[in-house]
Length: 194
Image 1 (cartoon, helix red, strand yellow):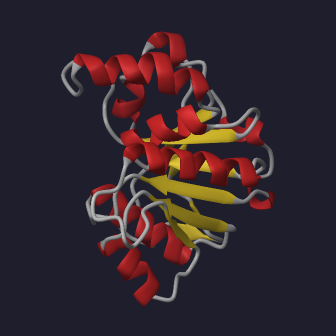
Image 2: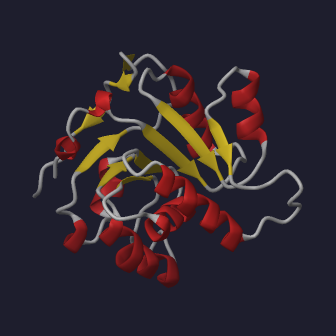
């Protein structure tokens, strides 16, 4: 399972997608990454909120929000069509889902040969997810992703056997910046089958 099949990642443009702008652990790690990376990257959020405001206050402006300012209760269907339209406009970008809901939406909206990496930060086993979420991951998301970024070897171990052939890399959550060199974390592992 090698993520290198994507080619030279420094020559690609990345679009990070998150369903929430609340500042949970995954979103705080994403904020730290976006503020420090040298890779061409932008962020797509499904809603306005603290993550967007924090990034803009720190002069990070590559943010698209799928919720209009006048939408007090954003429609999931409207957000889906906005995401699909944005993806069709930039089919060569690599889309990186930062949450399970974002992975589902990107998987469904993904046009043709666009590339989709899922940053898996939750186990996919019965102890971690309910039946409906496990089925959506197994039959909708995993068949449509190009590769997996996972936050731990344990998380990778919960991927159903059928999908362990996907290119994958363990990328620990960015809780600090000491491991950053040239915009890419040095704290990664390429797991082997076994």
